[in-house]
Every structure is written in C-alpha cells, then in structure tokens.
Image (cartoon, rainbow, N blue to C red; front, side, top):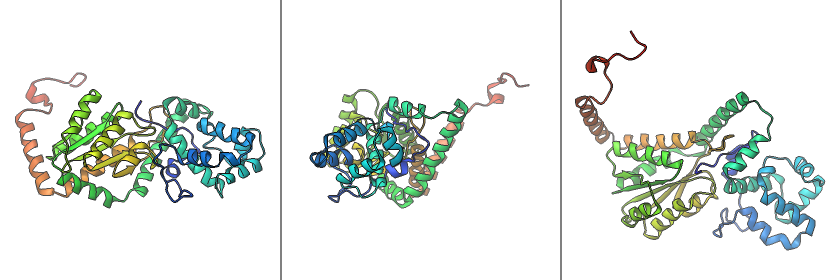
Length: 327
C-alpha cells in the first residue's frame, strides 16, 4: 500500500512532521536512519545491557509506545519512570517530549498498514466511533495543512510550474490517484503535465527525457515506495528541479527532493487519509489558475464550448431518455 495511515487518537502528526533540532544541528541524516536510530547507535555503549535492550525493544515496536506518557511507558515495559528518563538522557534528550517527538517520527517512517491497524485496534471503540474518529482526524489534518504551509510557498511552486516546459508527477499505488488528479488539473490549465503509470521502466524512461527546464513532483508517504524515491533521485542527478509531497521531514522523499510540502495522512484506517494531500493539490491548482488568469479563462472557455458541441454532459431532453425512478 502506498498510503501510510496513523492510528491512535492521542497522537497528532503535527508534532511528528516537525522534528526538533538534533545535537549535531541537523534534523535529517543522510544515512537513511531516523534521528532516534542515529542517537541510539552513537550512545548505546554508554547504556547498561538492560537499558540497551529496553531502547531496542521500543525502536523495534514504536507502534506500542509512540503515544504513551513517560509513566505509561514505564508501566508498559515494567520499569520505573525514573529509568525511562535516565535512559533517554543518555541519548542526549533533556525532556521526554523531545524523545517522544523523535519516536513519533521514527514510527512514521517505519509504519505499515499492519502497524496502523494494530495501533488502532488497541482502542476500545465501536465501528461508529471509529468512523467519527476518522473524520476528526481528517479535520485535524486539514487544520495542520492550513497552519503549517505558507500559501506563498504554493504560489512560488505555481511559478515553477508556469516556467517549466514539462511537469512529470510520480505517484504509485494509492498515490497514483493524487498524481493523476494533479496532472489532469494542470493539463486542463494548459500545462504539459503527465502522471506516468505502469512499470518501473516506463517511469524511468520518462525521467531520462527531462532536463533542467522541466519539473518533477514526487508523491509518497511513510517509508515511501522505492520506485518513487529512485525516480526523484534520478531526476535530481540530471539537474531536474524536484518537489515532494510527503508526510514528514524525515521521509526519503523529503530528504531527496529540493523542497517538500509536508501534509498529514494520519488515519485510524490501514489505508491512510488523502484529505489533506488532496486539499494541497487543490491549492496548487488554484494558484496555477490565478497566476495566469487570462490564459486559464481562455482555455476553460474553449473547453466549455467543445463540451457543449460534443454533448459531453448528460441531457435527458436532448437524449430523449428518462432517468429511472423519475416521472
């Protein structure tokens, strides 16, 4: 599955998408490890065998602990709260909140549909409650988008789209719905946009033809699909400007692309929520339309005239047909 949902009502992904500054001053490592994994590797020799085992268990099963308080975590692993605090202090964390923020980011990059459903199943709720909770998470995701992304950045991206000869949008599996929606909207506005589907070879052949005057937009979440990440890497090596749409600053897409838009796909469903990414894409299309209003109106007017001439829309009177169930 491409989408990586988030389970647990007690956790908002906003915290996870903005990891705090690391000890060495960098928020993202180039080794492919999460911040928490790097800290553990750096300081594990200073830990006793029992505390090393404790941290390794937490790292291997983040879905069991990312939403817990220090006291709850101590109870979960049958140690006292002071042991939890002293253990994370060895890793350089001054506050438990800093540790749990990196644990959440670690969970985001290690999440799978199984871990999402497993985390959600820990909460005792009815199916109706879970549906309503899913809507609540969708609203939070939209609020995080509204407060977390400056519209000026979207406006700047629309200028890049306008100045690009071609726009290639890579989204695979469930994210293919997002890439197709964005490419269709851009094509409607007159841009040479494409969302290739099919095999890895099909995607890579498209990328080989890109130049520095084009633009690649990569869409992937959580661990990120290999084909999407490699597509962004290849494009960047060719000097093609790259932009990512993902759900954390620590995902492979965010680390590879020149710039990224971070949107939450937090969900109690195993499939994740595309409400916020869709809203972001809608914002991109609005910006692209409004930065060249005259051209957009001209293209849309021509499209409207062609739709009328081709009888694209259903017309009961014109077609001489009566809808079933109507009089």
